[in-house]
Image 1 (cartoon, rainbow, N blue to C red):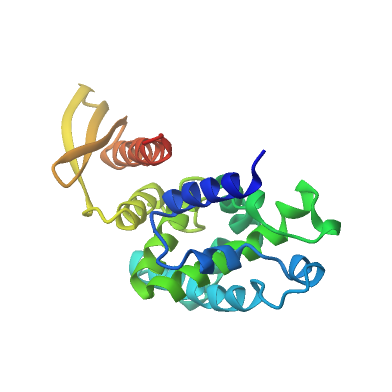
Image 2 (cartoon, helix red, strand yellow):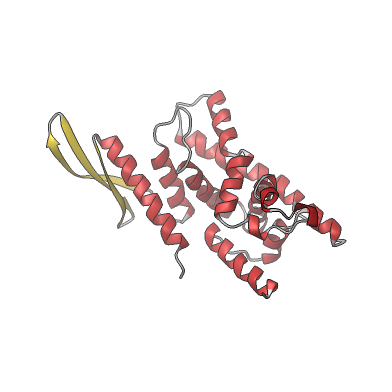
Length: 239
């Protein structure tokens, strides 16, 4: 296998997953270099400084999202919710989803999948966010964080929050540069004491998803989950 060609192709796929194209691909490559690899190769450039920057960028993006999305949360709940979102386990989960763990360049002692998919992967996610910020600035970095939030919130709830699927869809749409979702009730059927609501969610002029529920809120949740699934699948299909 031609490693250089494979690596270049995987970088293209990674940028597709991020929804961001680097002006300087070298920044992306540096975000994938662990200090152990740099040491073995006699190089001085690795991803620790980008990781430091990306950690701050991530906290800012998540803090703003929580502040705007959950106005009833006090400082303590905001802090706890942020900690759950930016924890290493969640970052590594997303890193594996976008194929980041396979692209990490590490020293020979750190080449096992178990090691690469754990803390090294979560650190690389932070470095990746730092690289996006350095390459494109604030708005692109926030858009990529929006994609991470959509992924996280489609799989994990926020303690004390009831609108996770809708928040996840909001952030996913934002990350893709789309307009805000709008929910419409299509019909209410069944008996008065057991109604069934059918709802669709529109993004721009397109129907993004639909769902049913025993009340309007449940139907909106179902529609949001359906839209997240469809938008994520659309982003992963070959062009």
